Amino acid sequence: MHLDQLPEATTVLIVGGGPIGLLTSVLLSAQGVDNVVVERRDEPQAAPAAHVVNARTFEIMRAAGIDMDRVWAACRPPADGWVRWMTSLTGDELGCVPFEGQHRVDELLDVTPTPLRNLSQHRLEPILRDHVTALFTECERVDGVKDAESVTSTIRSAVDGTTRSIRSEYVIAADGAGSRVRKWLGIEMEGPQRLQAFIAIHVEADLRHLVGDHPATLYWMIDPDIGGTYVAHDIDGTWVYMTDWNPDVEQLADYTDERCLELFRRGIGADPGVTLALRSITPWNMSCQIAASYSSGRVFLVGDAAHRFPPTGGLGLNTGAVDAQNLAWKLAAVHHGWAPASLLDTYGSERRPVAETNASKSLENAMQLFEVVTALGADPDADVSRANYRTAITTPEGRAAVQAATANQSEHFDLLGLQLGFVYTPAGGLVVDDGTPLPEAANPIRDYVPTTHPGARLPHAWIERDGERISTLDLVPLDRFVLLTSSPEWAAAGHAVAEGAVPLDVALVDPGFADLGPDGALLVRPDQHVGWRTAALDDDAVGTLHTALCALTHSTR
Image (cartoon, rainbow, N blue to C red; front, side, top):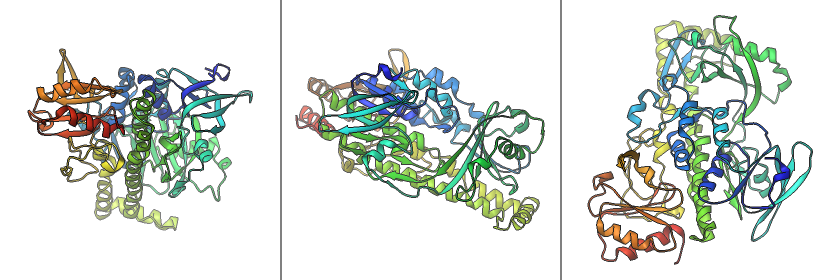
């Protein structure tokens, strides 16, 4: 759609049509909230950009009704899910770790119906675009006016400069790291803006025959004369080479097509005749920042507009997807009248602490990579670095040190605990504390411990419903709470409470599910997080459930 078709009003204006803005739109539409997305690009993202989509993001997409068959077809094979440290793409390997458990996908199906896969942004965006009802391309939001009831935004055509206004009850800023909406609000970013600067060289090439029996998603070059990292978005066709640069002393114009192709080619190490098709040259800054606030009045930040992490961990896009899920159900609840506007205050109080944790781990991963550099004997003097490198790769002691340093990076690429195990707290506003301690994982970064503790994601388990194998997560629609129980008494109370204002389903499950027991019950929020639980029957089950629902929706009714 183009600017001349823009409506005069909508419930939610979403600024930015990247993956998070598009997913937010799909989630809102699925919950009956009309929305409009404005995006300055005409076509989907051309460069691969983000490439790790984790289990939680896929679970959200699945719940939103995204065509998952099409999604799986766009993913790269799990067999390519490795990380390798190489002298060159065709040289010696000095270290290798699995990439996010893709070597044990079958095991991961015990904890999620949708294990992490390598799915690059340029493959994901077209799928999401096809699920969006009102996407206006080649236009951008340039200004706006807020009042108590709405926001009036000025949208300008990127084609001819014409403008139109649209009035919305809410605005969601999904317009990326340099968010103009965030700047318009005056919300500052906290944290370092530039930790390091890189040039991303996007090339189309089939290098499968070169990497041979060393398939991977990431190849770190340890030769100081090569350096950099190859990201195999698709070994058979799509590659990005990352090399650092210093924008304080270098010019982007210095990175000509010819120079960039030479930089890409020098790390191949063999077969100089391989065909390379240069597609883009993109500078970017690695930063670690979080917005001081996630909202201002009726305007909310999601994704990169709210937080920027180092890519070391692949948590950026995925954290944004859960932002979208958390905000969408709360906006829908307020819009449909079964929750007060104060519910929206819990968006930032729940999501910002998660971003802080993910930012900290991403930064830690980035810093830990220097262990490998240290083991290789990197030195400011290039000649010393070369000599130390030769010693490191040609002596048993040197190789052992490098291999130990690369093995120590394994946690960097194994973050299941962070991806599925984050827990909202009563301090965030929408969790009823049951007084029990949260189960502790041996390593909360890597290890996911399924739990029904209030605030945790509902554990996944395969169950039968109407002759179909589904996940317990499928029992939770986007637009309502669900009472899970095996108790007839709690089920009866749930059906009684379901007559009230807050939409509620009742689902019977086996008492063995998550040790629920014959008298236990769970109230699960529309975002699949447990809000309340009990292990015992209650003489006033209806009143108890009603009170819990009021607490979980900020309602007094």
